[in-house]
Image (cartoon, rainbow, N blue to C red; front, side):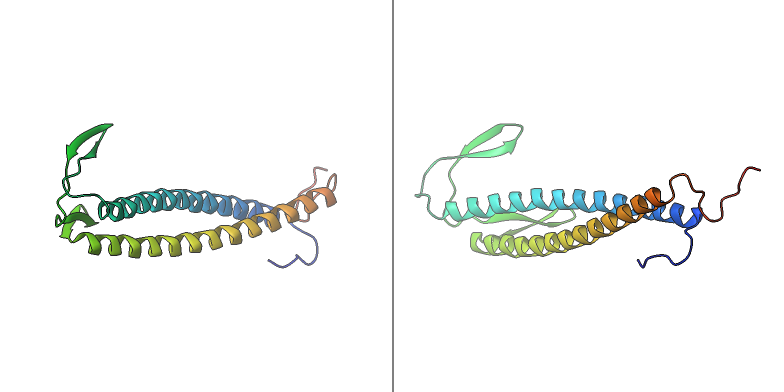
Length: 155
């Protein structure tokens, strides 16, 4: 975004305002994606920590297994029991605990990469928004009381 040369027209201001609106909408969308990824990351960390913790549980120990809605089942994990893990589109695969832990770690890496990309895009959009805001503020101060080029006077 280079500084305009010559007089600024009303059309240029309207384009900047429209661009600012687009940037703000994009920023809101990115922030929502960031929140989703943060929640997903927390859930994956919790699952991995739980699976790793099961390795330290004595055989025959009783656990409370959450089934949702603040409802739990009592159960004892068998040392050789497999884990059901979602693989997308509502499908699950049955894998060994260690493999499930590794899959969760890989997913966490991907989530962290995506989060980093989103954070970079957020910074870029915030910079663009700041530049446009400063430009529009400067134009407003410079043209207060003066018609913009291309405005039709009422004679």
